[in-house]
Length: 296
Image (cartoon, rainbow, N blue to C red; front, side, top):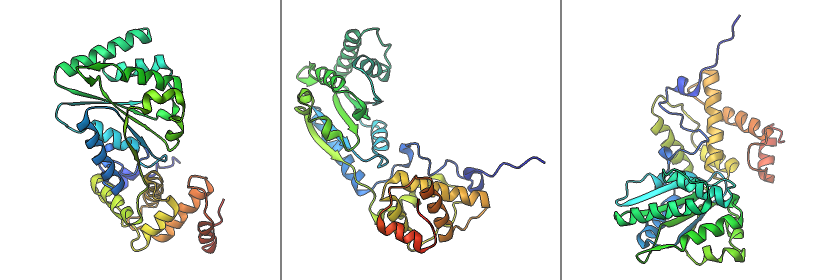
């Protein structure tokens, strides 16, 4: 006898789009206090049309969503180009930038540098304001970042060829202690550090994502659910997404529209055993054990 395939989350709850995928999606950006302040600083930065802005955040806090969202904003005369710069050599970086600018890369770094320079000068002549956004720069070697700083030294009519936004994890400060990168640090105008969701933002975050997904969302436990999620996620959106994703998956498999705290406990227990939640704090381990849920 053939086994039937369990209903998907989208199928069971009739979502138009999955509300809690782990892949960053600017469609779901939620205006936390931290993100509102970050966007305000970003807008202040672009009005200067000069220098570099640094953004750092712990993994899962939403820096990539913020940058993708910013790069897609319909800002007048702004041309923003988003680049994920995973572990690139100087040659690869300039080739990647050329691709991001929708240019045909050349075979050498020097030719790509010239290609990028000419393209940005052309945008300037047309009255546009170019901005390059490089995400995950903590994977780059110092020599690669140094080459980027050299590119920043090329000017056009008293303005830089482009503004630069550099984003990475919380060790971004350690990267720029390297003296060879003074060429970068001398041009930094702003530095943003993203923060986790506050306890009182979690319920709104969940409701926001469910509302954008339409369909027939489940009834989630109310009352202390935000406290419960905050305790086990530390306010990290990616971990909240993971917990709710697994909760909805459980609901779809068991065909339940009303999810309870028992379902929450079951999901938390599974995620702990799989090592997918932040490292246990003493009070969290005691909380699980008290409810008969052994911690890993």
